[in-house]
Length: 406
Image (cartoon, rainbow, N blue to C red; front, side, top):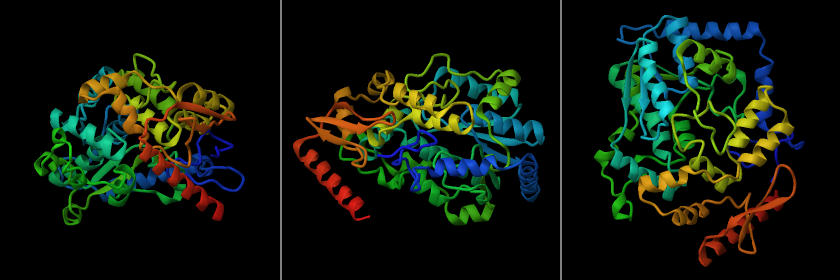
């Protein structure tokens, strides 16, 4: 497994491509954005203003913003309300995972921006089932959240006839999939392939486990609007990061000063940051640990890569963050297991099924992988059955044969 020579991102990261010199598309794409001068950012800002002009309508709201109450959605709302004096509708998907400080930030938005805010979500019992199904079927207990975030905003935009939907930071910035002039926008294909991992609401039905039974009515919220419904309203989803230079730290300092935005009250166990992903108690915790189990990296890698690219950290410092945080099993595992009535040993057994054979191998009944700081290390006992081990080894052999041919 190779690691980017300029950042800490590994070759197995989703949609990341390495060149022959070991430089990732993540780094290359960021360099292109860094070349944008203040004058070019001013031109991009004018493009945003042209979009606002194009989408002026007799709707009750000027636009719709999908928000969590996090730093990015506060900054989006600040720009729209304070810089452009518009009246947006805020929409939040509530997955029942908010940390206390995130609850406070979300509730504060309605007051500090003097704005309408819809908070919508499935029932708690349905959410518990979706946590278990997502984990067992997809290796992601937060699949429901990815679905809700990308679905509810469009359903409400259609229902309220609001043609312009806004998100914050440019999509898939860590992957480096796009260049500045791509002006990537939200679409149903990226929603299905990236956010929903190729699964849709009807793939979640018909669980063999009787305690996970769901009906179509339980998942009405997860049905994306039809093309006709979207075209009739003319709904368009844009990313404000295409038009405004994004700097998490500067923006967060401003939000704290102006709106009393709160960072995490306690340090996270799997990352050094205290300002990211507060809307979901598992996102920096056990959900991210699953990414480590699957692909061998986590928030220490993601956040250090972003901070290296932004100039807040050297690569050497980033490697230390990866070494310190990526492998940690966070204590919210106990919280999640109690929430969904799961045994911890079953969690690790199921998680093992999603290991990527490009990253992991079995030796002396333990899992091994290469490290960015050099050499390889063991990260836990193999809990697969004999048959599952053989399948994993066979899959690994096929992958290695393919690499050798290439």
